[in-house]
Image 1 (tube, rainbow, N blue to C red):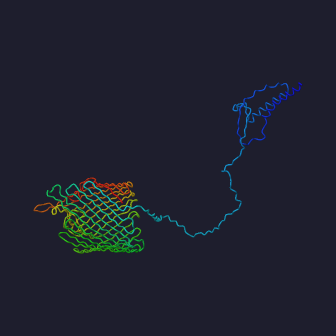
Image 2 (image 1 turned 90 degrees about the vertical axis):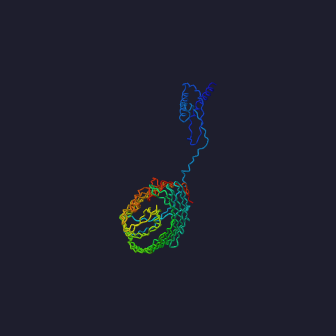
Image 3 (image 1 turned 90 degrees about the horizontal axis):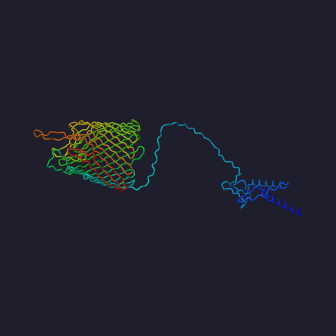
Length: 614
């Protein structure tokens, strides 16, 4: 009985020791390759059973097996009692949630099947034909072909313009321009202008009015153009000797009216070889002043020209019909001119050879033949040209021309034609740098009966008359011109004249300056602001007066008129594409200079206004 109980107890002890150990040490058949979710449950460590006594070998084997099982469990990833991160647990629960399914990304998939067909590319047979041509070694710069101009884009054209202003010295200013717009076959337009001003002296005033209409039309191979003009100028004889004023001085009035017109028929230019060209022009005017002076002029002129390679042969001519009258005379002063010529033109030269055949008829009847020749040679190709010129002409005396020079001329002026017997000039012209052009020349003129404007105060109070230097006068001098256009926004220009007179009968070239300088500039600061300026410097001149002398005679006295400078400028601002504002200042230096004896010019004056385009 006791033995039965003894075997039962031993069986229970063996079960308690071996069953847990084998459960912990049993390895899985295969390593898991599935996606798992691990859930770990920490348990309190079980109380250690007391070590069995070493009485029997069985207990010893059981203890070794239990220890070995504990070590295997630690190595297989279970909880390690010595690892604090596992909380000292010897057991771990693993829960499998789903089977692992590998997924391959689209970027690495290959969906292209290989082409197993054997294809050989076709090669065309080549044939070589060598060119028998000599290689040219031309290092010279060739002429560039002209670039075609791009077509113009249509834009809104403003064909009409009005400009009005007012300012100091009772200045009134107005201009108006009009045109029909863009039409290649017909152009019609015109303008109106007015300017008036008053000075500090009594009746020191002037006014100018201009009206003109014009038109041009293309008719097949020819074009015809015409113009009608009207000009009026009004002033007063306000000049007097301010050092010896006259109590009874009353300025007289003066005005000049001119109605003119012209028409021209010309052949259109064609870039063809051996072209024949021609032109015919008719013009005339009718002039009158506030008194009885009248002048009528009618001119028919034209030319024909035949081109033969580098030669130009032609004939130009004109018939100048002119009649002049005043209270004491009536004169017919007509001139016939013919100019046959031959021109040669090459790459580096240009020659004009001809003569001027001229005949006076009417109340004058002299016949003249003058040279008309000109030579141009390139000194520095494309930059500097040397020119020499010799010519002659008849200068018809005109009441209108004298009035334009000096509006204070009197009545019944003497009419006599002057003659340029031989004018010789030589000089250089060309381009020194991009945008910088020049012209410089020296000249010597021989003039017969040269006209001079002098005072006639002893007879007509404060008026002027025309006298002539009887004989041959010689004029030597120098002319220089300079034009610098740095860009479309800056332009500077100037001209200088230096003359030396050797007269035949007069002691002085009355009222003719020996030095004259004119210069100006135009600056476009931007698309809205523009500035212009000009300067005039004139050297000293002399006039003559007659004062009472002994035995009721008259003594000639020279009166000097000093040199002067006149500076003017203007500023224009374009507020919009249609509206602009301007300011003009004249005689900025406020110099009280005189152009003519006892006739001081206007002092500093300024005026401004607005312009409108439509």
